[in-house]
Image 1: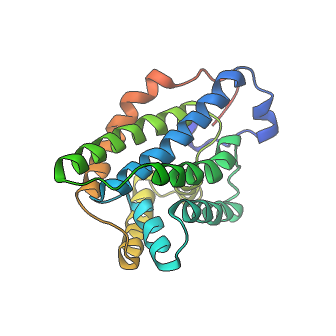
Image 2: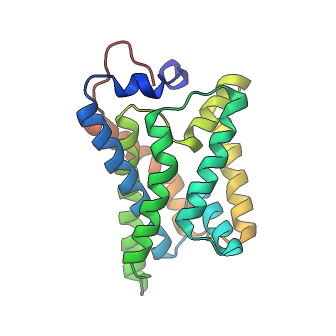
Length: 216
């Protein structure tokens, strides 16, 4: 827990760290795949993870593209870091933009799945790819995404457990997204049950070695 709650190095310092030639491409690959996996789950039409339920609900209400909403929500969440005094990393800044762009690109090339078999396969592949992508960008050790950093910072400042803070935030965004018209279904349940174990499975396989003395 101390590692998770430690302050991230300044982005300029991160860019000077050794091993960036591997870690930065890994970060960007993870973010692109993460956005594409979100598009896969949207096209499956069987329910989304809590944040994407919110993104889809806002998109349906505003007429903005799904990816644009992902970017705007990420930027808004990042502003909430200011009073929490949570430091951003290179990965945090890239996360705000790259995932949304990749999600819209994925939606542009992926047609909606037709038939239950195709929808289930697309959903399962989307969840697995999402976990691998998350492990890739977390394993690059260049800073958390805006949403992850939010619950980490709140837990650190409030003294509440990380699990409790994350549960409250995700249930809240899920409820708001559902009211706005976001898709809640079996995919939402599958994501909640599978994403943690899958990320834990993939992370040791892709985690880059951190420079001595670095904290993220």
